[in-house]
Image 1 (spheres, rainbow, N blue to C red):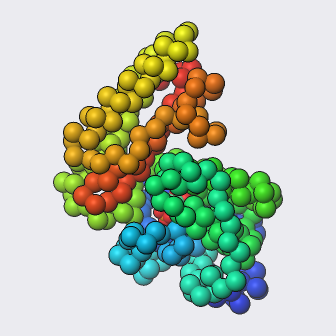
Image 2: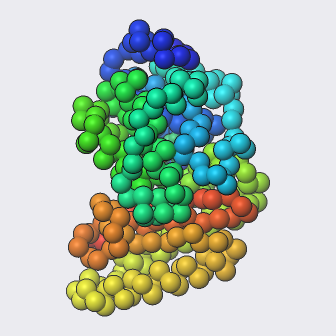
Length: 284
Ligand code: AMP
């Protein structure tokens, strides 16, 4: 496994082409490893970057306490035959970085975390420029992030192929996340209720007749309100629970057959996000 720690080393093109960049903040779990496997499946050498990006944390967020486990991460990557890792120094990445503004920052996580996606897109753009991958892999758990990166690619990096990885969950359905480390085992089981609620909400939404748009939208809103309440009653503080058009992140209006159900909650001071895409044409 090739480990690169400086911009200078990158100028010698250390990674073997074609390779896919998997940007992460470390503290790797099996969701991240699935991204690695997907890169390989698509015939790319996986190259991870591990960088806790300070620009994507708000002033009252968990930058200081964000879990870091570099030695273990490197072991896990090596065990999984990762081709390369880039572990940049913060100064080298931030120096003279071009600040970018992300689209859709007025929606979902962008709205709740001002500046978050500007920080993400600024650093991902920087990584694309210095590492020059042929492809990249991002997880569907961060659905809005995926949209923003696809937009960045369209604007500035058209040659980079975008690979989307499905959300990896634990045995109870909780979406894996480095922030789950803040929860103990019984709290994780409680937190998995979010996925159960999303799933049964999706089931109900799929059963709605689509013949009358007005009725559909009004029923849809009742279901949304009902679940908002149910989720809060279980001790979650709902930041948002929204039903949207997955292409635009605008409110779902029955103009497309796919619906994005997106949620963010605070639970035991941890912010958890999850989402499902519902296909209203299929019954499964
Ligand atoms: P992070 O290290 O949390 O910034 O995540 C790095 C990448 O891993 C992002 O593309 C995430 O969407 C992806 N990722 C994180 N958790 C999961 C998961 N449970 N399933 C799939 N992808 C994930």
